[in-house]
Length: 214
Image (cartoon, rainbow, N blue to C red; front, top):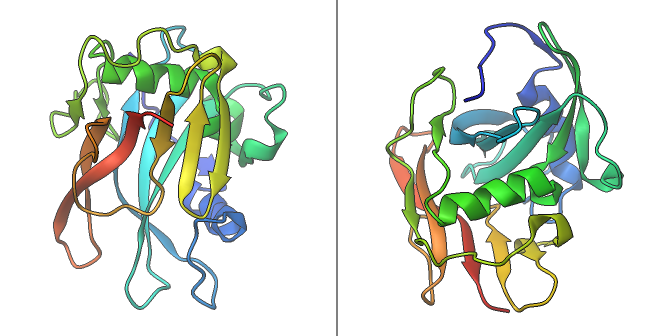
């Protein structure tokens, strides 16, 4: 189980995302600078204990009707080889030192843990409470979901619709939802369903990631 350190992070995650969001094809530009505010999320553990994995929701308060964005991130103590295009930025952690922050859709450790979650083999943890499971995360999958998929051989591509992670040797596609909307998995897909809070305080639930065919 990962440890949540109560310390400083410079720049903050929200400052990092404010600079990164406008470069993403799924971000709906508002004509001004993004103003991301934390709106929910959860964590997964790296079995090796080396990589932090967080599924963060931010609402862009700069928009007249704020959009909730799903930004999965990994935190590493060294650069991830071959993932330069997925780097969100670097931060200085008060305990761990320099951390390289990546878009987790392009990080094989995070992808592998999402597959494990769909199979019922990973525990979702609360985003900011050390050692607390997150009972609000609902997984629509099961033991047969994601069998035989190799996260180390996966390739992610991002468009205005979101991010698709494809696996070698088969038609399976893990779709990472970026602009969140209430609702459940479609077309029989196995999915991770969880919640977030709208700027007006409304509690919403929708799909963060879904595994289906091509």
